[in-house]
Length: 87
Image (tube, rainbow, N blue to C red; front, side, top):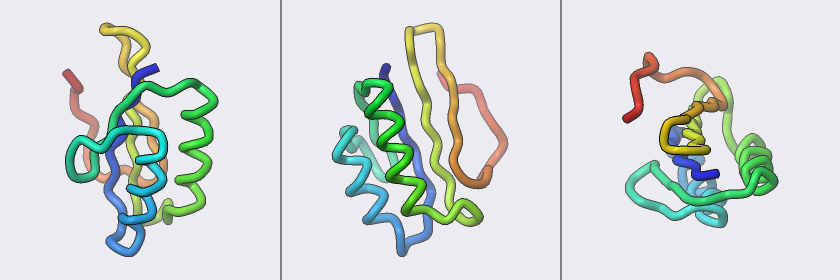
């Protein structure tokens, strides 16, 4: 699966979230990483990030692409903004 990971976390946790995510994905710009993951790697990444974030304050978004026409969104933590279309 191809995963796009976007995060908005408190400044105290930014470095830890980025360091953890970079072990699995490629950093492409501030708060955005992407790459190919197996299902097991994706689960491990989420488990590791859950231990770092404060779900009352932080938001992690995962866009999971199985094919060009199929995009699913997974969220950890609170919603920061209304959902918009991803093209």
